[in-house]
Image (cartoon, rainbow, N blue to C red; front, side):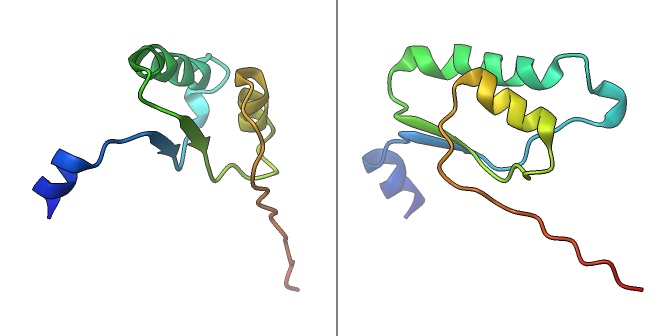
Length: 86
């Protein structure tokens, strides 16, 4: 089955599920460098129709800023609700 898909199906979309850095590496531009290097490798091939940057919480302002800086289109909104138990 894997061989069949390898021969007949071509990858035309990418999905980045979870992305982030440890606290000691934040504010160094590593997250932006990851996105930029991905673009430099993938976009020249002209085979990818879209990239989905998934699972970024609405509370994560830095990752939302990276999405805005790359011109990503917002298609889904994931909300985080908190309930504090006493």
